[in-house]
Amino acid sequence: MFKSTTKLILALTVTGVMTLSSYASEFKAGDLTLTDPFSRATPAAAPVAGGFVTISNGGSEPDRLVSGSAPFAGVVEIHQTSMEGDVMKMQKVEDGIVIPAGETVALKPGSYHIMFMKLQEPLKEGETRKATLVFEKAGPVEIEFSVLALGAKGAHADHGDAKKMDHSAHGKKDDHVEHKKTN
Image (cartoon, rainbow, N blue to C red):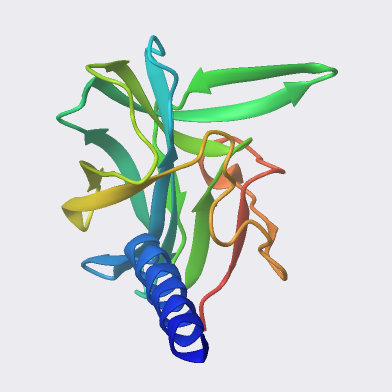
């Protein structure tokens, strides 16, 4: 009995580590590091899905996320979710998202995110989906979004010491995009 229990515990541990390692991922593009990209599983008829990722800029110059593409979606846009009173609104971000030098920006549920539209098929929990994000300076970078459960908030939902981001450099002050110093 001890031997079979040990094997079971070992198998569950390995499965847990494999699941965590398949989600915890990092991609580089120039001075940028993109970590833990994820999306959520979608119902069969859903035409859209959100994409979320944390972007750190280790360089001395700001960069800007300007666009994206994905073979599983007909259209990829950068969107912002905001609250106006009790109404949640989502809109396309025309001028991209600035990634300030030395800072980290989290694209997350309820904030800035990638919008995959005209999905060609449902996203299923446990799979990964490739997409390309394009930055003004770093250029295109192919990343893999882990598809998590419907409603998942990601591996690092609590950003601890993250601060509010000020986008006044391009005419918008955003009080719900979190960022923190990377150094």
